[in-house]
Image (tube, rainbow, N blue to C red; front, side, top):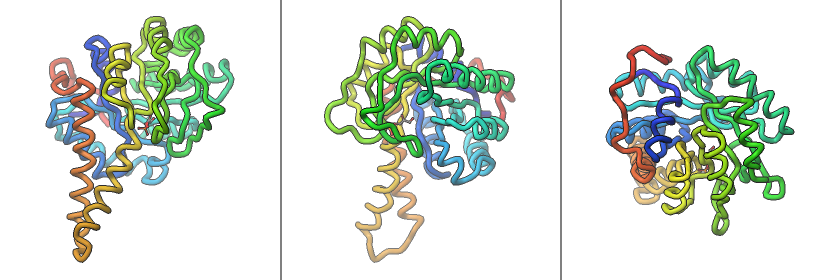
Length: 296
Ligand code: 13P
């Protein structure tokens, strides 16, 4: 199945009050785990790459892997660039075949954020690539983006409405109190902000900082309008723990492929459980897709 952008999958998710999982992959094996989990559960899914991962492997290499993995798969898959501040890298990913990108200009003053995000929308739209943009500052570390607690701030609902009207993103990431990385204590989610933003913007909302949120928090955020849920740290942990755990249990056996298999199984299990929890299992829509559209 050719890659698709996020537009149809997120608008269907918004209408159906479920969310599509967006999983930050690290390599070929973790990307394969995402595609296999989605296919087995008949779910739409978003393969997400951090800017750091793109720089590490190279955009052409990554795009080649994803093309190979999704070409024969029945799962609807979008390839999305996560938090990116660099317009050149965004352009490079669009040219290499990403079907969706995130511009993160949230550290800039409001009008600059609007202008930069708008530029990315203008760059992406002619290529049928969807755009996610952020307002407010989500605390924590997402690869190369560090936001300290004292620098974090929640999105203002009135500004969010103005931002979305001016930028026209396909997906909107307001800071609502979630955090990237491991939560220290109970996260305080600003549900009242989420509710106002979802009602005022009518744009599918991305829930960042998915790792460590409780089932109840996920369900409530999804019910209030989050149509995309981002999971990264959980995958990093499963990736390392799966490999190291296997080796620790078989420490005289130097068989890397067995350790890689154990790593794959652990990453895939977590992703499958997220997909079920987000309500997107069984939601792959095979009807409307036009073969050949959004090809890499
Ligand atoms: P976690 O690392 O907390 O899962 O957050 C992922 C994320 O929001 C990526 O943008």
